[in-house]
Structures are given as C-alpha cells and as structure tokens.
Image (cartoon, rainbow, N blue to C red; front, top):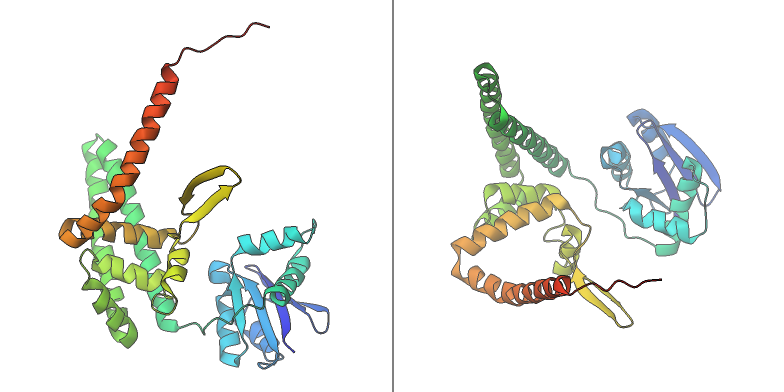
Length: 301
C-alpha cells in the first residue's frame, strides 16, 4: 500500500511527516542531510508530496530522483484550499507536512518525471536574461527622464554593457539548446512557425518543459490561457483566463502578434475571433455611456 510522506519546505530545513509511522522529522535543507533521509525511504512504497517552492526544493527533488523514490509537487494555492476545507485553523511546519500527506492520500497524485540538468540549466539562463532585460528597460526609462550630460552618459554606458551581457547569455542559451538533442529538435520546429522568434522558442523550452508531453488543453491550462466558465443561476458572465505561467503568456502574446503580421492565415483567423468581441465591447460601452447620461433621481427622506 502506498505510504504518502508529506514534506514542508523552507530555505533552512525540511519537515517530513511519515503516514505509516505517524512520526515527524526535521532535517537541514542540505545535500548530505537530504541524502541520509532519502536513503531510508523505499521506492516501491513511499511517495513524497510537497509544494512547489521554486529553488528550495531542488536538492530534495534530485535526491529523490536519484534514489528512485516517486514524488509530486503541487500549487500552494490548491493545498491551502484543501487545508481550509479540513477546517484546520492552526498553521505550523509540522501541520503543513501532515496536511500534504493527507492531500496525497486524498487525491493520489501522479509522480513527476525526474528533473533534468539540461532543462534546469536552460531555465536558469532564461531567468537571468529576463532579469537583465528588465534592468535594461529600467535604465532606458531613467535615460529618457535624465537631463544632465554626465548622468546620461553614465546610463548609456550601463545600457551598452547590458546589451553585451544579454547577447552573451543568449549565446549560452543557444549552445545549451544545441547540446540537448530533443530541445534542439523542438527549437527547430518552433522557429519554423511564422511569428515564433528564437526568444519565444527558448522561453517556451525553459518555462514550459511539459510542451509536447501533455494534451493541448493541459498545456493551455498551464499557460493560463484556458478560459474558465463563470455561471451560476441567472448569472452568466463571460469566461475568463486566470492563473498559469505569466512568462509563457508573454512569450506567446509576442508570437501571436508576429504571426498576425507575417501570415495571412493567422491574420484572417484573428480578425474572425476579434470582430464579435469588439462588437460586444462597443455595445457594452454604449450602454454604460447611455446610462451615465440619464438624470439621477434624488429621493428625499
């Protein structure tokens, strides 16, 4: 029978709750301590459930994958909603670990694939490039607002430095993609699509590694592009997208703009979709404008 081990992760330590023994364990979030704890788990019996915490779960994921112990990560928003549904009000690291064990028992999640060094290296490079691009954008804004010659010269020098650094990181990204056969194949396929640039391609490879491994609906949900209905009784609001990975949406948005401009097929498809929406927005705007012109009635007490 599957034994679900909940793990609450922080930067300093890891808190485990073992469902079978009912015991708690706290260890340092360090490679040696994690390896010693994982060595006591059984690949055919134990299943570790944790929340997605960015880089803080990296050592644990790699140790579990090396030992062959299955694990799964979950959106903290989902697990917190589950905790509220159990009417639990207290919150400690131990209670969170136990809640994650119960969450695994309740939903029986699927095991995640083992982490790949190539994919994580590409993701770290892509994040570094994004951060440097944001800094460069801030510098350009400061240059537009500066008026002293010395200040402008210093800012322009910094911008030139960032241009060189960003180009260098993009070269490392291209090299990392070339060295991985599957990523190189996917990259060549994506950049062959009208509107998909090399920036869009490596952004998708880095931030959406599930692409090509899940159904189109699942990929749309991961990217935050799947519309969710909002209906109850007579209320019938327009479906909207929400959540998902914002960096992926930005990359796809730029690709969509490029495709609309470069390809007649995509332009025609976009026009057919946008026309009804524009009509609805125009009608809604007219109704609001008409309502604002109506004389307001003042009722005396």
